[in-house]
Amino acid sequence: MSRDTTVSGRQIVASIFSEVSTTLKEVFSNRNIVAISSTNMLYTIFNGFWELWWGLYLVKVLGVSAIIVGFLGTIQNTSRILFQLPGGMLADRIGRKRVIVYGTALRVIAPIFLYFARSWYWVVPGIVINACASIYMPAFNALIAESLPEDKRGAGFGAYRFMTGIPSIFMPVVSGYYLDLMGLEQGVKTGLLMFIGAAFIATLVRHVYLSETLSEEVKEQEYDNGENREQLGMLDTFKKQPKTVWAMLSITIISGFAMRMTWAFLSIYATNVVGLSTTQYGMLQSIAMFISVPLYLVSGIVADRTSRKNLILLARGLGPFDSLSLFLFRDYNQLMAAYSVIGVAQGIGGGRLRTGGFMGGPAWSALLADLVPQRDRGKVMGLMGTISGLIGLPGSIIGGYIYESNPDLLLITGSLLEALSIPIILFFLKDPNKPETPEDPVRIR
Image (cartoon, rainbow, N blue to C red):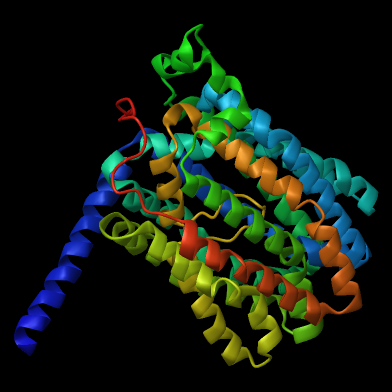
């Protein structure tokens, strides 16, 4: 009996590894995925030298208060809201590629303002332009979904997240050590300069190598003079989506608000309250990513074979532990164990909502792509980002006020808010028994 069980277990493992290999080859035979993933990896590497530490830089170098940090976050979120919806509409009208290239180009400009800022007033133009770049996120998500094999969307998203997540494994600890050596001010400024170069290269690569996935036939379904013209109304379009999409919107709102409240203050809390060095805090982030990145692959395959909902539920059930761990533990070994749990949550279907966008786990992304027709994906993703952003707008500044009065209370509040999404997933999120969208056109290979 034990022999049969062992053989069966080995067969399952062998089957998963075989499917992982096949999926990687199939996904990365697509030029769009190669272009997007390679530029995203470049982006992640050089973004890692400064973004994680930006809140700390504002406090220690520019001398702003936690309230101002929250205020700047509110300005950034406001700017992002203004461009999410137009970005989704443009993605469905003029195509994915052009919007992605224009948005990526804005990433070149924004860090220039941040580099030369001598007070928080001069940070504002940089964060506004950086937020404007979010105009391409609905197009970005739609292009990825439309470039993946339809029958392996979960595995495809997992393969994509695996490749693009590799730099996230080592960049937090590398950047933390790098800042310990160079100093916070010089380190962040050098990181901004490197990021400008990386964004410029990413713009060129995406302009040259991306291929459009939105066919003229699909665009005509929406913009001709026929029966589909009513879909031009954003709310009408969203009303036609399955109830599960509405539940996903609610979860995005709750988790986005919680992350907006807490994320900018986590590195400040870790260094000022817990007493960690930047190297130590970076190592915690790297531990989480070391676990989550390989899990992207496995969780995507499991999501295709079993249930997207169950993986999302497990991930969000562990989600509140993210912010709460720094409050609960002061011993560094305990924190390393805690961040291992956080890594599991990220890898199996959670994803972190640092910018208030969609949860990026393979199960979440695949479920959304399963439910929303291709002709509506840009608008629906844009509308979800806009509604989440509007409701979460006060999150950063509220977080700043709470942190000023009681840093511990901020982490507790953020964790309790995240927990509110669990019953919504449990009772309202549904796996489709069969594809709920019209068959998409043949994808570009």
